[in-house]
Amino acid sequence: MLTTGSQQGIDLCGKVFINPGDNVWVENPTYLAAIQIYKVYNACFNTVITDKDGMDIDALKQGAAENGGKLVYTVPTFQNPTGKSLSLERRKAIIECLEDNDMILVEDDPYSDLRYEGEVLPPIKSFDTSGRVVYLGSFSKTIAPGLRTGYIVANEEILAKMMVGKQTVDLHSNALSQVLIYEYLKSETYDAHLESIKLLYKNKRDKMLNLMQAHFPDCAKWEKPQGGMFIWVEFPQGVSMTEFLSVAMDEKIAFIPGASFYALGGTDNTMRLNFSNSTEADMEKGIKKLGELLKKLFNK
Amino acid sequence: MLTTGSQQGIDLCGKVFINPGDNVWVENPTYLAAIQIYKVYNACFNTVITDKDGMDIDALKQGAAENGGKLVYTVPTFQNPTGKSLSLERRKAIIECLEDNDMILVEDDPYSDLRYEGEVLPPIKSFDTSGRVVYLGSFSKTIAPGLRTGYIVANEEILAKMMVGKQTVDLHSNALSQVLIYEYLKSETYDAHLESIKLLYKNKRDKMLNLMQAHFPDCAKWEKPQGGMFIWVEFPQGVSMTEFLSVAMDEKIAFIPGASFYALGGTDNTMRLNFSNSTEADMEKGIKKLGELLKKLFNK
Image 1 (spheres, rainbow over the protein chains, first blue to last red):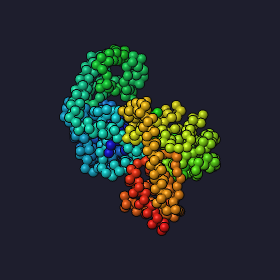
Image 2 (image 1 turned 180 degrees about the vertical axis):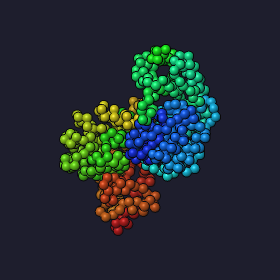
Image 3 (image 1 turned 60 degrees about the vertical axis):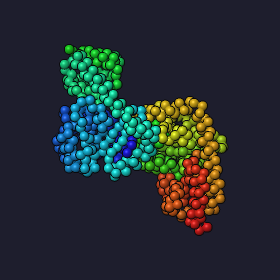
Image 4 (image 1 turned 45 degrees about the horizontal axis):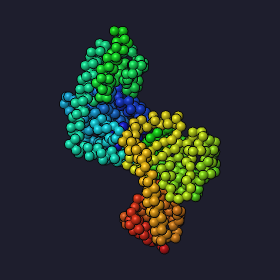
């Protein structure tokens, strides 16, 4: 089913599946809009720890067995905000966990086409034999966010309910955007376009990582994302990146403090940097200055 | 604020104003999507009788004084489904009723640009001095429904809340559609286009009314709408237009049974006909056949 951006897909999952008080499982940290959306439906949030291979499925299994759960929300590939991806093994393992605990998985996947290196990971949906996975796709990161077009892949029973929900929200998706995207995807131009933005973003990622290496203080930790748009930076406990943002903003540098990506709060020593949007010149100026400010913050 | 169709405006009013169990006042009958939308927010529906001048404001006053109310929803001009318009006097009177009972009015106005005769009525919003009216406009009936672009006029405090609600639903409205509509409205072409569709729809309305006069049974009652897209037909009590629809569908004729426009149900002797969409040839064939079937139904 076509949607008004894949954001609408997140919302329709809430409309269809979540009753007030239902347990929703999310990565810690997770995409902040998912937190905002499921709060509207009065979801009760539960968080799952993540490591370099994404969501810890054993932790999810244990948590769901103890507390129950209606829905699991994940961005399994080049996650927003951390840039991490769920390993192949865990993609298979999560299906069993859904079945054992009678849960639905929302697989939010706007970034997987933006892979700059490493092996392609199949969507979790490809291992779904019992119709428990709702896959959300997007053209916002590959074609244009302004066209507000995404899509849902799910079984017919789920789509029928979502169709009713969508009708109350906006009747139908933008017809012109659908035609434009359809024609563009059919054309040979699209593949070349995708390759060109991948190369562009890869170079920007590398540029930003090099600049961070040169200018950030030693206490800042990050990993190189294999795709997507974000670099996630962790700092020592006790510092507030929310407060530091206003220091950076005074120098006209913006980042997203990590705090808002934690469904249950409590962590403020992280930041999300976006590398796909800045010009190389702005990036050079910005990361250098940000490094200076950070070194001052950490007295180094 | 620009919205993804004015339908999104109806939904955002629900998101911002309605808590479960809140009393919502609607015309009887009213736009069926408003019923579906506010049901999602667990509104408690209350209906106001209407006559040829639209919603009976004295009845609304009395009802709101007795039962209270959070929100009033109305399509004051060329209402969907009845085609009736709220009189000038009542447009002024409703403001006082809102103030006396601390209610918000949703003025859903997608049809007022499609006036074929009679004096232009100012929007209720133009009499609103206390910020209680949320005006919803649309380009779907005048430019193109496929562009999914509407707008909300309300005070800043209300718009700020709606902005947060909109961000969770679809982040922002389609950028291409906004540019296209902006350029089209600025061009001289738009006025000529509006005049041409008004003439087209007026002729179709007259054509359909003439055909109904010629072919419908005497027990069918309707009024000539001064604008919009719909003719509302009432039949004697006791007949089910919902059942009759399947008879008509066998002959490939579709109409909307009126039952779904009544928030509290209980009425099935009405139908909504649309005159803007059919070709003249289809209309001739369809209304003639519909008349035959109706005469058979009423044994005349």
